[in-house]
Amino acid sequence: MKKDKLHIHWYPGHIAKAERQLKEKLSLVDVVIEVRDSRIPLSSSYNNIRKLLGDKPRLLLLNKADLADKNELLKWVKYLKETTDCNVIATEAKGNKDLNLVVKNVVDLAEPKIQALMAKGLLRRPARAMVVGMPNVGKSSVINKLTQSSKTKIGAKAGVTRQQQWVRINPKLELLDTPGIIPTRQDDQEQAAKLAFVSSVSENAYSPEPVAKFLLELLSKSEHFEFIKDYYKVEDLSLESIAIQRKWIIKGENPDTERTAIYVLKDFREGRLGKIILDELPE
Ligand SMILES: Nc1nc2c(ncn2[C@@H]2O[C@H](COP(=O)(O)OP(=O)(O)O)[C@@H](O)[C@H]2O)c(=O)[nH]1
Ligand SMILES: [Mg+2]
Image (cartoon, rainbow, N blue to C red; front, side):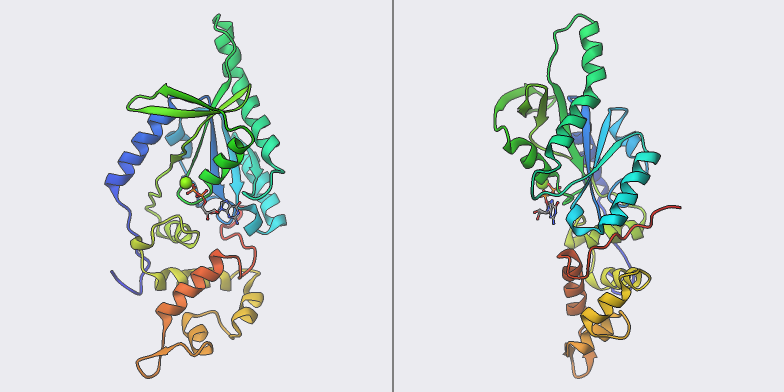
């Protein structure tokens, strides 16, 4: 793998399989809860997500809100409400303050479908929902949060190829207990790199140096520049400067940029560089 260039691999075989499994689950639900990472509200989804998910009503959760700048995130919520056909809620895995709002939104989104079934003479049934999203955005955390209030496993309903497990959240809502994974297929290398920043891409798929270098480039152009320069005690945000500052030197006098890259990515992921949103809000 080239060390100097961004090059993030994706695997068409895995993608086809993931999309097939996703579609199978989608056929079972009335509503989709799409989870994204608040630090990359656009890059943690597809452009044509509508095509992948079909025309099901969809609630968008910008999760890991605790890792993103609050005011900036409010602007993103507004923007996504205006430019998609979805309601949008910023969520955090810790704490339950957004729980009732999420449940209410999902129930409301399903109501037209339930009404339509009743108009055909069927009895009212609970809405069925599932959580979808790219790897590591917090799908399992969202499911746990929704199901912890009510652990009633209501057992299996037949899926196409295997049994699916449902949990009753309340009398009006049932949730599929495993998420649908949106594969991180990315033809766009910059988007793939952003997904790597938030650990949505497997570490086997890239080498850390070019990815961390790109992160530092983005941070250098951001309002967080001064804070991060101070944090690393450097004059410019480059792997070399940070390595030299830390005295991470190898083979005589070369800055250990690989070790530095791994640390910079870790610092970003763990929020030490600040609450940062890396996508640019369209005008
Ligand atoms: N800071 C923060 N971490 C979160 C949040 N939600 C999930 N995580 C963490 O992100 C990682 C991935 O979460 P998980 O629910 O397994 O994601 P999944 O791969 O989409 O199912 C875990 O380490 C979680 O603890 C959140 O709202 N805030
Ligand atoms: Mg999971």
